[in-house]
Structure formats: C-alpha cells, structure tokens
Amino acid sequence: MALVKARVRYFDLYDVAPIGYCTLNAKGLITEANKTIASLLGVAQAELIERPLSHFILKQDQDIYYLFSKPFFKSVAAVQRGQGRTRGDPYSESSTCELRMVKKDQAAFWVSLKMSAVHWAEQQFEFRVTLSDISDRKRAEERQVDLDVQQKQIQKAESLQRMAGAIAHLFNNQLYVVMGNLEMALDDLVGSPTVRSKLVNAIRAARRSSEVSGLMLTYLGHNAGEAESIDLSAMCLDSLSRIQRYIPDHVAIETDLSFPGPVVKANTSQLQQVLIQLITNGWEAIGDRIGRIRITTKTINASEIPKSHIAPAEWRCVAEIFACLEISDTGCGISGEEMDKIFDPFFSTKFTGRGLGLAVATGLAKAWNGMIGVESTVGKGSVFRFCLPLVNDGEPLLAEQLPEPWDFKKTAKTVLVVDDDYIVRTLTVAVLERLGLSVHAAAGGKEAIALFQRHQGKIDCLITDLCMPDMDGWETLSAVRKIQADLPVILSSGYDEAKAMSGYHSEHIQAFLHKPYSLDDVREVLGRILGLQNSVSPVPVT
Image (cartoon, rainbow, N blue to C red; front, side, top):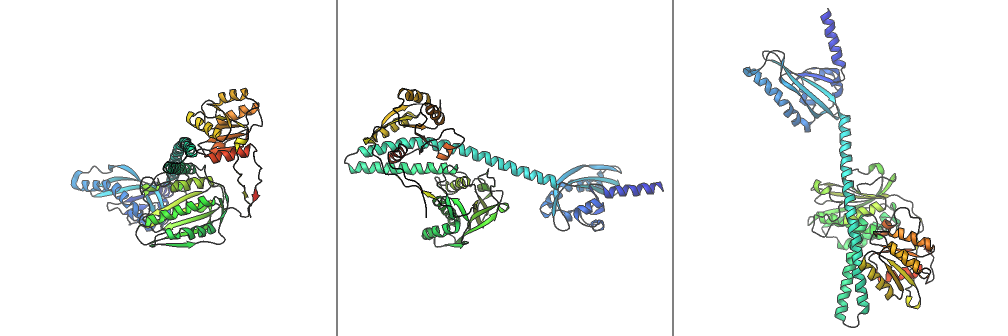
C-alpha cells in the first residue's frame, strides 16, 4: 500500500513539474510524457504517446535534433553488439541542445532539450528527455544582438562622419585658395583668349570639386538647404515631367500619388535630387531587362517603419505620423553583404567615383528628422522608403532680395582677418584689398586681440576662421567684443554653417562665409553687414 501511495505521489510530482518530461524508446517514440510537456505543445497527454518527438520539432531545426540524438541511438546499436554496460548504467552522458518546437497551432517556440540514455536490461533501452521553454531568453538575446548591430552601425557612422567632416573642411580651405587665385588671375588678365579660357575651365572644375565637398557635408546632415513646405505628390509629378525622357524605354514608371499629398518640411531642390537618385538606382538595378519602377506617396505610422537596414543608424523617432516617399523596382535586388554598406559614402557596386547618392539622402533625412530604409530580395527587386515627419501646410516663407554689389573703393573701411593657415590668410588679404578695403591680418586669436587693441576704433569688421589652435573663432569673437561690443563679425569655415553654429554661444555673428567662397560672395556679405546699402526686409512668398 505504501509503495502504491509513493508511486502515485511520484507521478503527481512528475505531471506538475515546471519542466517538461518525456521518455523515448529505442525507436525515438514517446512512451511517457508529463502534463507540462503536453501543455507546452498544446496537445493532450494521450496524443503524445507512440509519436516520434521529432514530429513536434520545427522543420528548419530537424537537422539539429538529428545530429544531437544520433550519438544516443548509436549507443543502442553498440549495446546490441555486446558492447553495452550493466543494467541501469547510463552508457551515454546526458547532453543538451537548443532548438525550436511547434505547438499544435503551428506557433514555434524555443526549448532547451536535454537527453540521457539508460540500458535497463537485455535489449531494453530508454531515453529520458527534459524540455524547458527558453523563448523569453532567446528573444532577449535577439534584442541584444540587434542592439549590438545597431551600436556598431552607429560607431561606423560616427567614424565616417568624422572623416568626411575633416576631409570636407581641409578640402574647402584649399579650394578657396585655388578659386580665389584663379579669379584674381582672370581679373588681371588682359587679352589672350586662350589663357582666359583655360582659367575659366579651371574655375569651373574647382567649383565642381567644391560641390562634391558640399555633398560630403550634406551626408553629415549639415547642408540641408532652406526648408519649405512641400507636397510630396506635387513634387513627384513635377519632377517626373522633367526626368521621364531620360528613363530608358524598357523601364515602365508607375505612380500611386495621393492628392493632395502628404506635406513635409524640406528643401525642394534637394528632395528632387533624392527622388532622382532613387529612380536612377532602380533602373540601374533593372539593367537591360524589361522592368518597372513604382513611385508611391503615403502617410505611415511610426510603428510601421522597419527597424533594420535604415539610415542614419542613430535615428530616433520624433513623430507619430510620417510622410513616406516609396520607390520600388523589379531589379536585381541587393545582397546581404551589400545591405550593410549601402548607405556608406562612396560605396557603389557600379564603378569608382559613384556612391554619394544614398549617403546624401541619408544626410538630408538626418537634417530633416527623417530616415531612409530599404528592403530587398535578390533577383526580385528593392523598396526604398524616404520618410519625413508630417507637417501642416500653409506657413508663409520668407524671401530675401539680394543686395546690389557694392564698390568699396569709394569707402574707407578696414577689416581684421584672422586665420591660422598662411596661404588662406594671404589670399583673403589679397581679395579684400582687391575690393578696395584696408586690411590687418593675424595668425591667431591672441595676435588678433593685440592688433585690435593697437588699432582700436579704426577697425570696421572682423573676419575670423572657426578652427584655430590657440583660440577658436568664437573665443576670438568674445575677446574682441569685450573691447568693442558692437563690432560686426563674419565667421568663416570649411565646415557648414549648421556645424559652425552648433552649441551655445554667448555672442552672435552678422554673417557666415562658407569656404570656398568667391569674390562676389565676400563683396555681398561685407556690403550687407557694414550697412553700405539699403537694407531690404524679407517679404512673404505669395
């Protein structure tokens, strides 16, 4: 009687244990199973008996189970050949694997599966299996992997941004020297049409180079242009009417544009460039085959935006509803290896020199608090989504009339130039003197303060570089303003204005000159801030 009670108590504990238990025979069929494993699989206990455990394992993980259980079943064969051990002696150490099982409703879940084999008597074997649901742990591990991947992408993006910013800054300084000297040489040239033509071509090439430098700054999100309210559908319709003739005949363009379309705050010209770039990528992916590109405008909830294969990597959602410009194609698709690099500057599967298009789109998305994402299947095509926060239209924009060029030779104005680069400083002095201004030059902030104190009351404007070793432009500005609080100041840098103006500054400037700048640029800015022409108030665009 006591033995019966003990057996009943044992099976009660066996049934309600927090871990799933089952026993397999030598053929891998379930001979016993507790209620916990039946509950995990969503079936009745009776349905498990005489069924193979492999029947409840996800198809994709069948190989894992086969390779895991194979040594145990080999041990059975060894016993049958007379190489076994004594009754009750486990002849194969217990082992554990992790795989996915399937519930009755086909829902998959992760388990930790532990198995051990026991030889009870001649030709009698059994395999004891325990199952623990580890789905929560696996989900946590997957989230951690996603976070690790995202962190690596952010670190890579930050590294690329530092490199791009440094190159653009250095590049712009040197281009300023090249363009300035070329412009002055052209201005001095008398006759010789052949030489003049060569100088003009050199200036054009330098300006094209400065455009590439500008694109690198755009990749950083520092050169997003003047923002305005834009109807995405109207922008697409207007752009397509101009670029349709450049699209190959074997590529069909389909549209699904809502009217009125979703409105965003962006720069029209740059947003058109994003559209053109995405369309160009589409037809290049299609190649010589017949294919189609579909352009769609719509609104989507923030929750609908994918979390993978997006840029910028550090993007954080700032709105609940987004306007979405979606470009899909039936091209060759993008491989997994390429997907991790597609938004990097200068990465291209075409040829060297390409690869700034998507990087620029990334920078513009960053500047406008949006994102760009891609989904792709090799051999079937790709879908790009450019998403920006949805805004209300109807805000009036301001347009400023450009002042007329000013002749400084009729005035007696003096400018203090501060720049640590000797060549840049020398050229700036030559440019300003060419305009008819008197100029003092300093190689750094401390020298500039000393010069300003010596010529106090005789300097009408300060032009200072931003990045200098002893005192930067803002520190120099603050020190000079302590001597003369109302001194007009122009800040100059190879960095974009947004980068130069970032952070808190107790002082303000009258103007910013982005290197490389031309004679006309500096003439217009100086004329405006020195009050040498009538000021023009901004007027609303109608």
